[in-house]
Image (cartoon, rainbow, N blue to C red; front, top):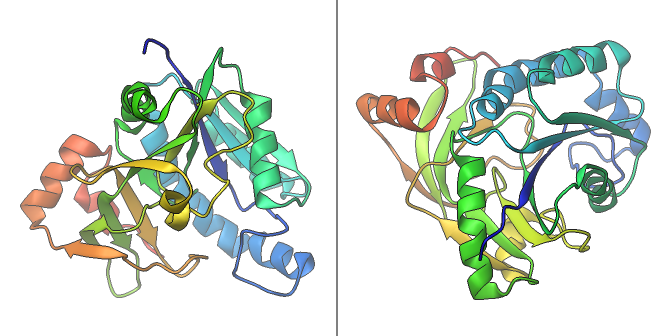
Length: 269
């Protein structure tokens, strides 16, 4: 199978949606106040700059689109800062939408960014996590192979179950390995014909394997998930923790990510 799919990385950056966010239950006004709190946004930007953006800029395959979804009422000063930060990304778009259902909003973002002749890989990434250096390249490499099994017109998911958790806390940070028993959303992609309704946001990432054909790589570390006080979803390991030695962590950092262990351990909540 000889084709090159378009990879579109979708990042929901404090997007004020109608669902898909569990931190408050007081309606849009309460969610808006929480999401756009100045101190919270400062923390999100710090992690975005330290982890997410650096991992995007360091991809070995730089031919991908970054689509950042924000609310139409996202604070203007922070929007300007976000615009300045992502300028070095060759194909980055910031798309502002009013409150919508999560799937509808992300689907609209993907449709606005689609330029592929045949297939799109919709890839999800949170604004406080990091992908490995070769995440985009691996999605492209694996996509034709999994479609040979599933069928060229069958939406199919490629996920990575092996990675690291970075717990950021006042008493000191902890960096450790995980092999998840349930699919994790960081760097997870769905390959599908362009224009088809299903995307990587069609199904909760922890349940993606119950609805779609899913290939998971459990051998190589492909993600860093940050765990901190602003996490919306429960920062729980569904699988096995791996306590690497400092030397092993240094080796993983040197070969898989654009950070050093010291940089990660120095991040503050």
